[in-house]
Length: 263
Length: 263
DNA sequence: CGATGGGTTGAGCACGATCAATGTAGGTGG
DNA sequence: CCACCTACATTGATCGTGCTCAACCCATCG
Image (cartoon, rainbow over all chains, first blue to last red):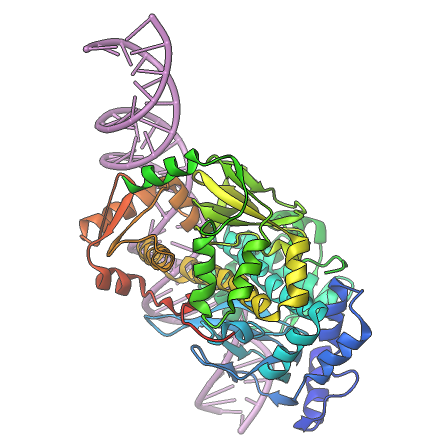
């Protein structure tokens, strides 16, 4: 299984390593997809801003709620999630899922204090970027700054879509939409095959993302399988009927700002 | 009623006027609240970026979905809302409410294409800021750029909170939370009295914001009144028991980033 | 082998949707 | 000044999606 391979490769690497070429591939790809006119030197500057790389086991809290981190984190490998803890039972509501290449808490640079936490959902290889370095970028590289700004806004757009899903889509449609979105985002960074991708989450985590109970999440997934829209076995999702899935979800990838454009 | 006064004052002004001192008070206040160290010259630069001011009647669409605006808009007076139109019946789901001082579609500057529309909910006095001018700011004024970036992220934080409300709070709690949030945001820009503020929306618009049916929204409001938490008469909301309302909603204003801090 | 974490199934319940009427206040024209 | 109209608020009745609780299954792993 590809997931296994990847993770073991990850584990094989040293626990702390120097940033080097290739380590931030997905992140650079994410920048370039949205603005290929971004100068090579800006990409280099971005990579050079990385202070250190760490491997973190699943479940690790990257940023605690209310914390005041002095650095932001780029996921190089693995999945993470932003969450808010609920007042009553302390359960975690997942706000957004974060994939390799995501500059997860870049937001903490302007915000200073975060209103939510970030947790690794799988083993993660992450790079730390000191706020000092980001600040320096804003002072000297307006173009890269705008692209980074853009990234945080795509994140916001994803939240808005989820908001819309919660309010207007049925559980089935919402689930279909999430799958469409994940597939599309993964494909951009080269993590999806023709019509399949690895989904290293439990149904419980998925439920928490969509805002469903675990039980109902399970039933919704059964529906998607019964309708022969997807299969999901051993951590891999296969999309059987992309068009039908997309139209069920009324998924339109425009909000992901995937078009290349001078920013 | 103060609302009436304000609106008639608005109507009395000319239809298109030059930007001048005092016209962007709320917007400047919003900048300064979060970073009082922002230099005077940056505020001036911000005001100078305003190209023209217009008065728009309630219902006007400021930005159409999928549009590619060449300028962004600051609300000087009035309420607006971001929305996404639903696929099935074409109804509008309100994503966020926007108040005086909000740089509503600043996001369209990095994003280029918006995934949602913006509509005036009341008569609005709005200022247009050409993207060209914003770009110039990013090239020459890193500090102001960071504060503008921050603004868009506060917007995102508000969406995240709404997302959380949808998933985890009951309709009653969600409504209470929205009232707490609006009160807090309005107070910052000087639009709320001790414990009251003008809410120039219909129950239907409120329902669309929270994602409820109009009927249920009405019942929820009745609950809030029956519990003697608020009153809402002739467009003015009075908060009777702030502490109780806040704890019912588990409202914590941290996500609004209202603390003053060098950014 | 039992323990554990995920996935699956069933039964009953509740929050909030929907449909349909009715109430009420402001605004307009005869 | 009243009759009417319109927009918004309110009420009642019924229905359905998704929650909760509780049990059971199954694979993996120590």
